[in-house]
Image (cartoon, rainbow, N blue to C red; front, side):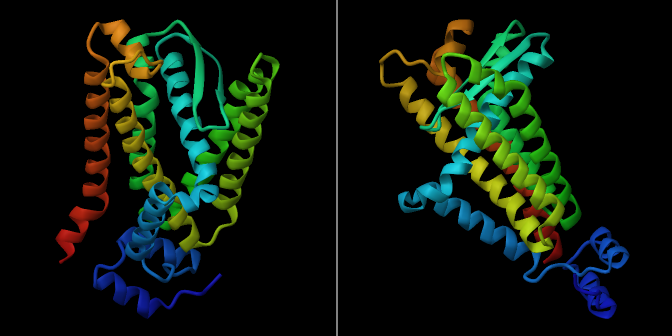
Length: 271
C-alpha cells in the first residue's frame, strides 16, 4: 500500500487526470491512483484482448477466457428463462468452447437471443465499471461470486447427467474462475484490478462480435445448423441470418455506447 502524495494528487485533479470521486477515494484510503494511469491500463487491456482473440499462439492463455465467455452465454439463456417465468434446469460447457443451456417454460423469443446479447451486455457493464479502482475491485468480487454460485446451482446437476465429463469441466472451470475473480477483487492491486476488469470487458466484447460473425456465416451457408439463430427462426418464421445480423448490430450499439460514454466523450471534453 502506498501513501497519498496529497499535493501531487490535487495537482492531477486540477489537470483533469482523475475525477473528484477518485480523488476523494484516494484521500480516504490513503492510496494514489496506480501508475500508469487508467488510460494506459485500458489501452493495454484492449491490446491484450485483441492478441488473445486473433493470434493462435496465445490459445492456451485465451482458453480459460473462452470457457468463461461460453459460461456467461449459457447463463444469459438461463437468466432470461427465470425472468420470464420459466426454469433454468442446468447448463454445460464443453471442452471445445461450445455450450448448452437447458431451460423449461418462459418466453423463448427472449431466452434464445439472451446468450449472445447477454455476453454483449456483460462486456458493456464491465467497460463502464472498469473506469476506476473502487468499482473495479467490487466488480471482480461480485462477478466471481455470481459465477461460482451459478456454477454450483446450475452446473453441478450436469455431473449427474449423460454429459458427466463435460459437467465436471463445467464445474471445475466455473468454480476456479469464480474463486480467482473473488480473490482478485479482494487482494489485487489497484492497477491489476482495473486491468483485469477491462481485459474481461474487451475480450467478451470481441468474442461477442466473432461469435456472431460465425453465426452469420453458419446461417447463410444453406445447410441446417443447430444454432440460436436457427432456433429463433423456427419461433418467429424469419430468416436465421436476419437474426444473426440483428444481434450483431445490437451488440455493436451496446459496446459502442459504453465506450463512448466511459472513455471517448470524457477524453474529448478534457482536451
